Image (cartoon, rainbow, N blue to C red; front, side):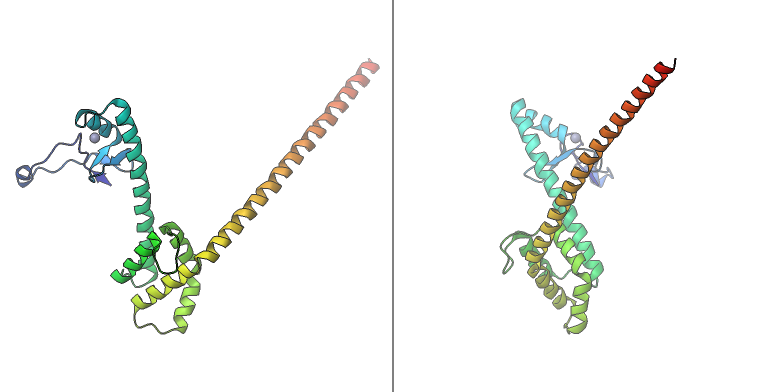
Length: 219
Ligand SMILES: [Zn+2]
């Protein structure tokens, strides 16, 4: 995506736009480090530093700190947006391509942790993971139940997904523990291999020296 840098890209006035002057957007979000400030304006990370020094009269230390802070916030916001987009694309693909506003409202509550019966927020990446794991199961329920419309089914499914969050967390923790155990076993095996290798090398060394000795004796 291309964005306008509010420091190095020229200001295009309404009059210039009317004359056909195209706005310059020199931030390439794929390639450049960039920040979004509190007012929602974008800058190249470096440009934001200059902007703070010149326009905000900050000291170098202050500006550095501020740039680092906004970089972190911007990265977090972008990740959130990407995960949300990916999730919503999957949802549209799974259902009939619509995103009913009531469903979006419920979804927002889930993300913020204010959904009924939920005591912590669930992020979009995790929601997507649960939906994907439950997709067949949700289809089976839908085949048995009669929903008035897709919106009703989407809200019902969301409640099922959220209701399974506790079990999902337990399941993920178990997977983590198992993989940690597997790593532990692998570590032990590697150590054993190392010892075997040393022992083998030592034996080879011994036989070599023995051959040397025999050779010497024969000479
Ligand atoms: Zn710039």
